[in-house]
Amino acid sequence: MTAIGVTAFDPEGTGSPGEHDDLAFLVLDGDRETSWPTERYVRRDLGVKSGVGLVVELAEISTVHSITIETDATGWAVEIAVADTAGRSRADYGRAVAEGSGLTSRAEFEIDASGRFALIWFTDLGEGELPVRIRVREITVR
Image (tube, rainbow, N blue to C red; front, side, top):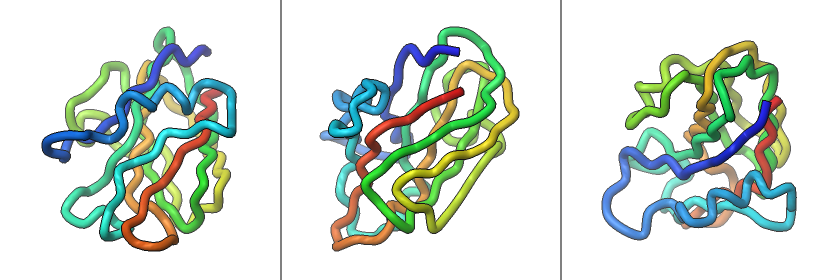
């Protein structure tokens, strides 16, 4: 299966500058020195938002067996959902097929779900000085 694109996903956000949409492609570039950062938040749980994330698009509907996420953070939390079509809200992607909290900088999730779009939905940006952000270095979908 081949990831052909990725977009920042911030359906609860308002206004500019967004979630660094122009840098989302860096999570698929194979270079762990580059990264996509979220905006900075005054609370690690994103305050009034339920989350923020990335949507990875696959070349075709496929069975996803695992997703590995590499970040610069510790203590972060994520939900992963897989859907046949891209959504406009978190709910559009359905139930989480994997999730974790208190994670280290590299987290691998075993998944058995079919779809063309994988939502990586961060619900906690992890430990660090406020305002806090997470930098995602790479995402690998298998």
